[in-house]
Image (cartoon, rainbow, N blue to C red; front, side, top):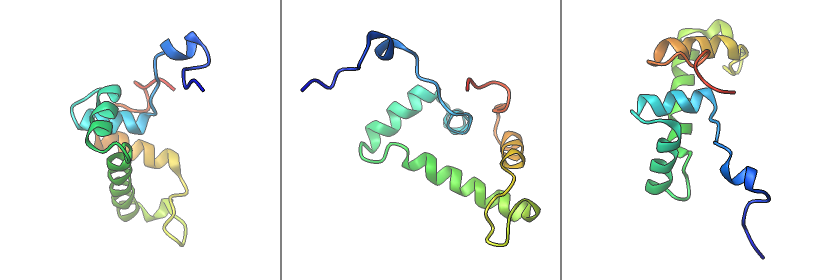
Length: 100
């Protein structure tokens, strides 16, 4: 059975990345596609592992700085506030410059 894409359009369509992964990539000094390729090459079984660890670290920092945006279990309840805070932390305006 073939594992080829269903259509040519799917095969050639540029991949869009989420703003938070784009921010992570730019902090690493790479574009998102380059970062994904780098992470896949370094850890084929956990390509998004480093991104997830980075994002968790940022969430911990945010919860400590802004407990008012968290519930009693310290779950972030205001994702927009977290995104704005993250936007201030990284050298990239992730709210405005990234494709959806």
